[in-house]
Image 1 (cartoon, rainbow, N blue to C red):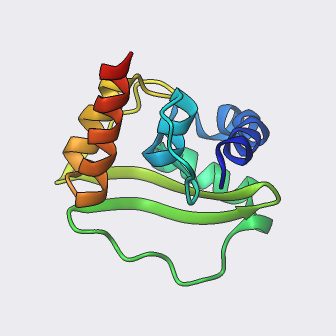
Image 2: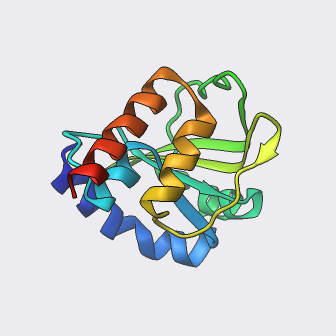
Length: 143
């Protein structure tokens, strides 16, 4: 999705996130784009919430649930409730109770600050996350 498509997706789903998934936070490329980082696109919008919030979204968004096989856990990352939704505006992945290396990822704000995004990207530590962290740092350094 382009930055404009991602912003529209975000605007369309945020009322449901507030109503059903609070507290919640965005992570990944989508969150970086919404912060203003000049990334060209994001595959989806990644939402982290609690297990209860993920369950409420699963009920509310049942018609959008992707019927494909769920993604296998990625290395040291586990969600107690993971679901991918294909909304009319674009795909959303919801991670309920996301743990990184056994520690629950706390939701600090709907769109975490650039410093918090850096912390999360480094915590994930995969090559693609470290590349995003480097792009975020370069963007911050450029002012």
